[in-house]
Length: 156
Image (tube, rainbow, N blue to C red; front, side, top):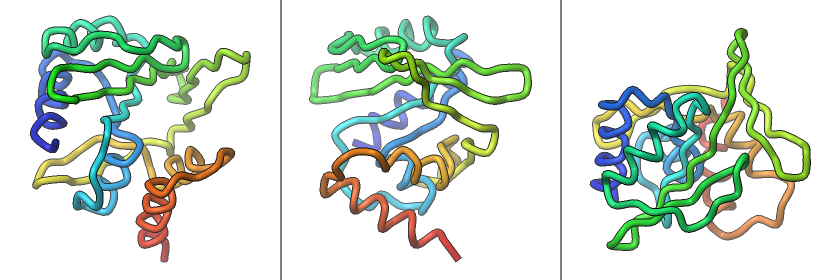
């Protein structure tokens, strides 16, 4: 699946879409290696680039499977490829806000963004603190518990 991730990230880079890898791939980027299988690629995307992002993914064969905007859009492509796009709107100070259908929001402070490495490639990703935050408030699945153990290895 790493090849599909690289294909998506390369395409978004070419089209100038600001993005950060989250979820399991984001955790793996922070620890520097792929630590488990992944169903999808989670991406936080600058909301101003959302339309370009969706067009870019469409060119790669992705079509919308789940539209829960303003929270997320999940797209799928042949070969069991999935990308979960989370639009984030930024203010002038670099604080991000992801909409929630209940009227609340997910907050992304400027410290929510980091870089990691996978396959010798630098990857923009969500920070360990932001990943930890997003792994709370729900019943954890085995892959979430795995990700939290990986994040714990990054703590002093």
